[in-house]
Length: 322
Length: 215
Image: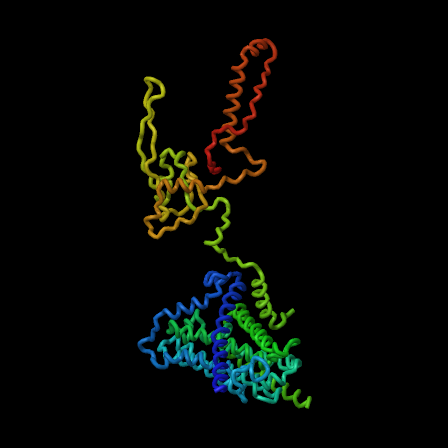
């Protein structure tokens, strides 16, 4: 009975985090992006600096009619948003926030495999949406998503593998436990590759060619309205949470900090995640969209070689220090 | 010298970060009224006391958006046996702001300073027909017309003032000449230089109440 309660409580907390953090990041994006462009952003919803803007958006989305195009593959079309969203919830369960059993939804032994594999499933949602919509823009978006997934999954996995090599374990808490401060310069290339590849996999600007609203009308999401569209958006922001959390855990030492790591480790994790999320928003504001061929070129000619070089470096250092 | 690779990317990030730390440019309009420059062309106000129904504005208007109706009234003769005076009385003065293109020609052309630019701009309507504003509304806007900006230091005196001063000086001279004919007669033999000593009434009260400045 106690076990059941424990599991239920953990899942509940993870679910709450899953619902709240993406909204916080979304609101931050509204405000940060606005101020970076010399604007104020939402100011009215909720009274104080538009804090409830996303709540208002959610209410609006919920009121909209749920339209399924006549020629669409109905079941797949309706299922796609869930496929896009749920993997991130599953990943969130496995990300450790603090040291010990208490600060992780569920300890998975092969955590890094689990996390990367499940994150790959998320992209499937966009593929399904693109194919099932029976719309040429959606199809274009879906195909671009597929190409992007193929190109960027490889450097992402390689960079993660480098950390696993360094730590000698594939368990996420194990990796953070093994973390030392000098891993930071040692794994910096891997960290950059992982973060950039993750951004591309989330289709965040500047890697948003598959959604490219100004040319292929939001790609795979063209035909979606209402709550299903909101789920896709939520998936994007949940993806940011997961990506930033994973980068924190793998490369930035999770709950390790210069001081106060005991007891307040989870604050460090959240702080690092928040800083990374800010960087994600910052990149979106600063850079124009990469062209489709530039996207592929960046992955295959820059990120993959860099990731391989990082693995080589990790191997060499690992052998030398033993 | 070749730029360092990636320096452009860093520069882009720096620009957005710097912008974030600065004050944003958003005008919070309904909450904060805009700070409008002088001579803002918001709406046209009518100072109907000055209007003589000469119809110049209506005729010069390129859009034909000014409507004027009037009738003639006669005033009794001022002197017995004289002829009755007739004058125009304004019945309707309306400007259709759906047609108006805010060229300001009517204001330029008005010889009696009856039309003025007002900075007032919040007169949107939900029906296009309601954009034809009648004389009462136009007269109300007259209260929002700002004072004309002061003249530059050392500028030429305004024509109205110059003309008024000239008249006043002439009058004063004539009065002075009439007031002491005796003294003049006494001195008539010798010294001819009588200084008129104009009284220092700088601005005789002949100006329109709210002066347009542009004539």
